[in-house]
Length: 214
Image (tube, rainbow, N blue to C red; front, side, top):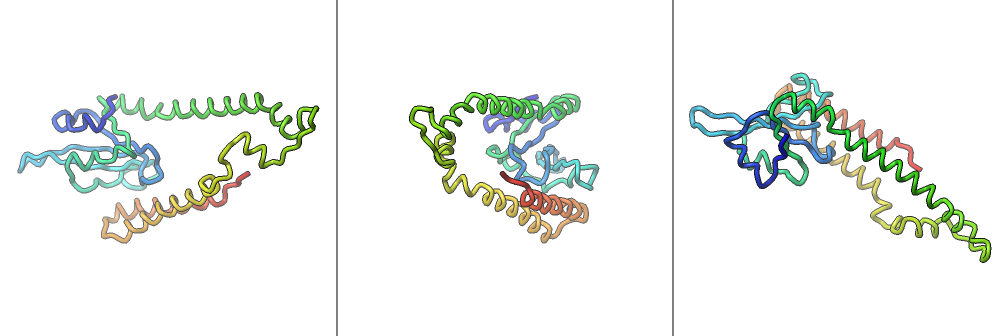
């Protein structure tokens, strides 16, 4: 596997072997899990052009593959390095091995975070007791907000308090983007794909609003 960067992507123009994909760093703004990038040649003009097709196992079209997008040039197809990771694989086997194990490090990070959180709680449990009940000599008492200030400075900022609102706005923007695309003149296959996407967008909003918070 080779990572494609802003510095080397133009090398692909004459070395477009294997499988090339675009993988969102965060899936919030994208309608597919990842995108296949294809290079084709117009034999009438001998010029190379590029198309993309999204993959999502929930899609109804082409066994999970969305219809190809419009033809474009290499600069436009590799124009989102801030939100995408781009990879080139030698063959299908290498791609499949990557796909199967791509979340292993993320899962390891989550497990490590849980472990460290537990260690933190165990380490600072005596400190919390001291904040609540004092050290015995001064019998200090701290209000809950004072404890939070000491343990998590910045918890009461506007940015922190508005996290849920910002998340909801992002989800609604995503849904509106799908609705806008449905209003365009599109093929029946793409309409089927977008209708499925809209259902998912709305369900994500409902799940978010119904999620229990502590």
